[in-house]
Image 1 (cartoon, rainbow, N blue to C red):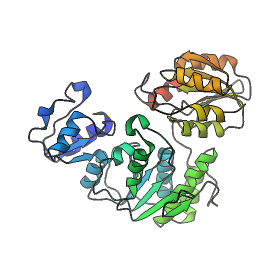
Image 2: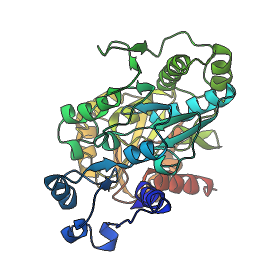
Image 3: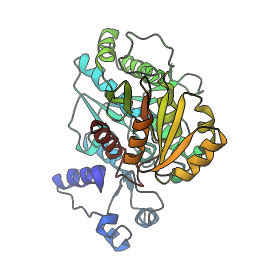
Image 4: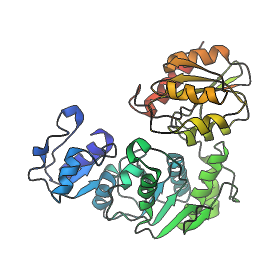
Amino acid sequence: MARSGTAAAEALEQRGVQVVRADRKLGNDDDLTLLGGVGLLVKSPGVPGENPLVVTARAHAIPVWSEVELGYRLLGEPALLGVTGTNGKTTTCELLGAIFRAAGRDVVVAGNVGSPLAAARPADWIVCELSSFQLEDVHELRCRVAVLLNLEPDHLDRHATFEAYRDAKLRIFERADAAVVPRGLGLPGIEFAADDPLPAEPRIPGAHNRENAAAATAAARATGIDDAAIAEGLRAFPGVEHRLELVRELRGVRYVNDSKATNTAAARRGVAAYGAPLRLILGGSLKGEDFGPFALELGPLVRRAYLIGEATDELARALAAAAVPYEGSGDLATAVRAASAAAEPGEVVLLSPACASYDQFENFERRGEEFRCLVQNLS
């Protein structure tokens, strides 16, 4: 059930709809008798289309909606600014929220960040983070402005091919009134790039965050917000948790939590954000990515990588082939201790795992919180 499933169930029950909950933890996620008398199946993002309940529902012409489709309809087809992409979605959505508030607009940030759409309050504008999983099962959801930030291989364990992943992402443009797209991708719409002139320089670090700011600027302008409010939002927005979050500086060493870097593209951006020697913590659960190209790009600034979790062996092979020093740490606590003991003043200990977290943590947030706690406890 998790956040979106619970929000969908509660929103329906509040409207007098009878709801049957199906969940692995309830032990009934493959009980096909649950579909008797059911007129709609609402699928949480983490549930694959191959789930027996989903397959059977489709075979019996029972509609299958994602939770965002349900939330959109329950809100009465609100003014939606949708944001998707492989990386940067949460940062861009929260930045847009700051810009809208600076402009005096009534706005809610929801979807794959913060509140599920089914639990969101009505507002003049809803900025909605949309994942490929959520976009798989939309039917009437329409964005006034639809934003694609970037498109790189991810979630191949679920989508199987990059083409299937891409097609799910591009569904954000179905029925959209306006599209905001990366320059050079060959898609129709308002283009943006990291080197665009901006009304103000963003407070958050990294070239990738300047690209996020350029996308947010283009999207805000498309809704009629002026550059003065955009500049105020860009200057004020401090960033979000688990994305290049500076936890502390101790004895000249900076400790940075980038737990949201759950794929190599995101970790690549994290590494590139610092022109300082790095102690890089990598690893977690596998998503079907090839670590070889990522390892070859790490370069001499990565003094040593500390490997954790299920991906350790695959990462070790890739790093060895690229002549990047590494050691197996097993878990996050061991990695933090080892990196801290070796780090010298001026270096950065960076958790930018390039992997999902589900082997050792409930989600990337819990991984980031554990890193933060471990770092704060360093003497």
